[in-house]
Amino acid sequence: MFGLFNKNNNESNASFSTEWLPQIQENQQRFFDFLDKIEIRMQELTEAAIPELTEMRNSTEESFKMDFHRMKSGIDGQLENIRKKVYDVHDDKILDLYHEIKHNYSPKDKDRDVLDAFRNDCRSRYNLFEEKYQAARNAVDATDYEDYEIAYQKVLDEYAAIKDKFHCKQCGSPISIEKMFFINVHLNCSACQTQNTFEPSTQARMLQHFAQDLAHQRAADLYEKYEKESEKERFYYHEMHPLKLSLNFEKDSKIKTETEAKIAHLEAKRQESIKNTPLFKIDYLQKKFAEWKKITPDLADHLETRLQNELTSIYNN
Image (cartoon, rainbow, N blue to C red; front, side):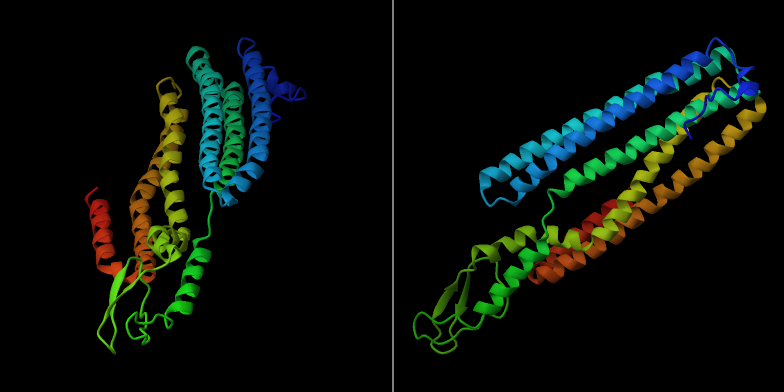
């Protein structure tokens, strides 16, 4: 894919403009070398950070968890700076040169094929970097993952252990805890009518704080589907952008027609994504709130109101 300028391609090389061929060769090679080095830097950064982040995240000490979030924020910032630097170099050294040559030299036929191959090969290498960047981000983000099913099971086990062991403070009669509570509640003794205060454990109180995160994890497949569809819209937009710019300098009517057809195809894909994205978000929200209600059934009415508000916001956009 990257063997664009093989010396044995003499027949094609004979028609190349000596004014711009060396420049695109140099820029392509320097761009590839730059990406090789920056990918090594990105790999070294994540490989050094992930074990330390994992250790901090698993610590039970609050100070370590605070250190974790500070460190992760710093790593996220460095990765984003790397990505921006690559974007700027690709834009400045590849796309700008490509459009400058098209405007000033109006290359045709074999020369045009070489120029387009220069842009396409550099774009392919750029996309490969993007894949590695996303993999690095995902690996760093994974250190902040907590399986809330484990915490939820602990709450359920605790409830099963205590629900039939609460007794009246006055007469000692058993008082059944018929459901999980997250706050202090007053329960009447059926034997002597004394009002007793039941205080849930710290672990049980935490359920209402992580219930939403647990519901999100249970709906993660639909959230990922929604996120991917949302990214498609941006992808198609950025794919169209250089094509639209090229039309400003294109003089060949055949090439112009082909480019316009490519733009129309990408725009159709983009519009399809724009249509699907809110539908996928609705699917995610409905599953998330359904799970949330199962986890905290006492909040079902409140959660249904929140869901309807979010759906209304989507429908109105």
